[in-house]
Length: 45
Image 1 (cartoon, rainbow, N blue to C red):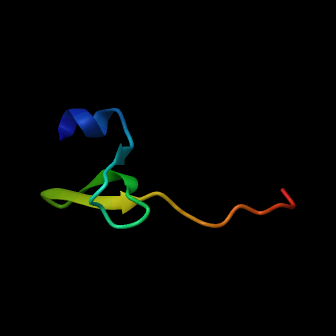
Image 2 (tube, rainbow, N blue to C red):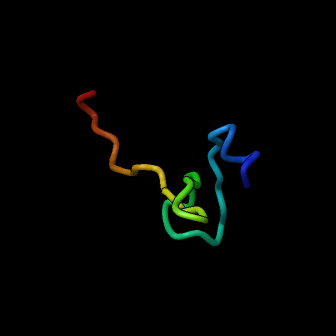
């Protein structure tokens, strides 16, 4: 997990809660799942 965190990589998984893509961050003596921010695309941008 330390090697994974060193690269700040994204992880995607079919059995993770929506949106199913995110990264892990160090939290205490373990890790926490941080999903990517998700929102609708705006046509005016």
